[in-house]
Image (cartoon, rainbow over all chains, first blue to last red; front, side):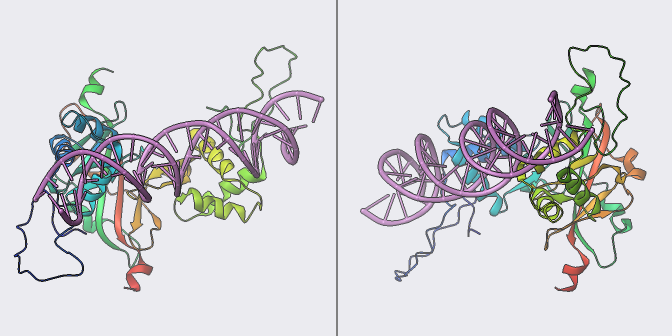
Length: 156
Length: 156
DNA sequence: TTTCTTGCAAACCTTTTGCACACCT
DNA sequence: AGGTGTGCAAAAGGTTTGCAAGAAA
C-alpha cells in the first residue's frame, strides 16, 4: 500500500537533513501526471462502472498518447490504494468505479451490456434474516439485477 | 444449440430411408465418453460451483487421461445446452454448477476462497420493492454473500 | 465404417513486465 | 538532477482452435 494518493498529495516531509538508507520520501503513486488524471477523470465522470477498454478510450480523449499498460498499472494503483473499486459481473469483465460512491448495487442490461448504478441497498434491512449455515459470518454482499435498461426495453 | 444432451440420449430417428443433404442425425454433443461423464460427475457431486482447474483435477481422478482442452470444450457444450450454469464471482474466476439446482445464491469465503450454495432466495419477497430507474425491466438477479465460512471463522 | 471426440501443440487475447526514455518535483 | 512514470514490445497466463489419431455408435 502507498503512503499517499497522488490525488491528495501530502506535504513534503520536513527536511531534517538526516541521512536514510532507504529514501522513504520517494514512493510509487505520488506523482501527478496527465495520464493518471485522465484515467481517474474517466472513472469519476462515468455514470456507471467502466471496463478497461472503455477507460482507455475515454481517457485517450484527454491525453492523446496513453498506452494500455499505463491504464492497467494505474488501475492497480488506484485499486490498491482504495480510491477505486473493481467489480466483476456475470459477463466476466472487470469494471472499475470510484470508491467514494458509498454502498450500492448494479443493474446489468443484457441487451446493450451497460452497467448502471442503483441507489440504495434493499439488502440491508433483510440481511439479518438471510439464512446461512451455522458458523458462517456475513461481512459483505453484492447484488446485481439483470434485465433491460430503459433504452433497450423501449426499442424492443 | 444441440438437439439432445448426451446425458439424455434421444432415441434414434426412424429410418425412413429418405436422403438428406445435411445429415441432421449427426450432431456434436451426443456421444457419451468417459471424459464427459467424468466432467459432469465432478460438477454434480460438488457441494458448490467449481472452477475449471478444480473440475480438471476432480475429473482426472475418474479418467486418468483428460486434457484441459476437453474440459473447456465440454463446459462450453454443457453451458450452451443448458445443463450447466456458469457464474462469475468477484474474484473473476468462472465457476460451473449443475443447472437443475433451482434458483439459489452463493456464499464466498474470503479466506479459503471456496464458494457455497445457499438454499432459498431472500430477494424474491422484496424484488418488487427494489427501486430501479423508470423503464428498467428486472428479469433476474444475483446475490453473493461474502465473509468467512464456518471452518475459517473457527480458525481465526 | 463413419463421424464425433480427444490430446497435443499452436494460435489468440488479455494482462503483466522489462527497459530505455520522458517528465514530475 | 534524481527517480518515478510512460510507451513499446516481449513475456506470461489462460482459453480457443487445427489437426491427426482414437473411440462411440
